[in-house]
Image 1 (cartoon, rainbow, N blue to C red):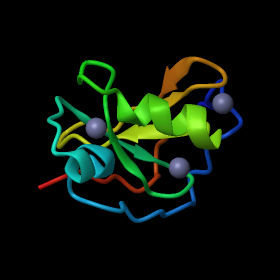
Image 2 (cartoon, rainbow, N blue to C red):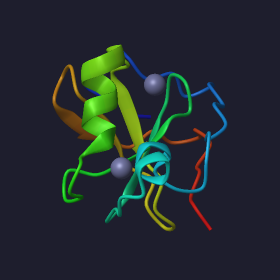
Image 3 (spheres, rainbow, N blue to C red):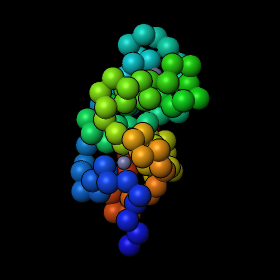
Length: 97
Ligand SMILES: [Zn+2]
Ligand SMILES: [Zn+2]
Ligand SMILES: [Zn+2]
């Protein structure tokens, strides 16, 4: 078992996604490219390839450090504090429909 270089992620935490699309883009009528789920509160935001980068904006606003890809078939995690990508074997995986 490899220990991720980040101490912010909890493999046992099951945080239900708050929406099936970027919550901020849905609220403003914007569009997005890819989705990320906040591992702290379940906020769903759009990636840095999206026009409004709501996942990163969520971190800037709340300080929630870790996101997981919300894309089908992707399980990687990213920590904004440590600036490291990693995988978390055994952790729940979520994806939009
Ligand atoms: Zn970290
Ligand atoms: Zn968005
Ligand atoms: Zn959050």
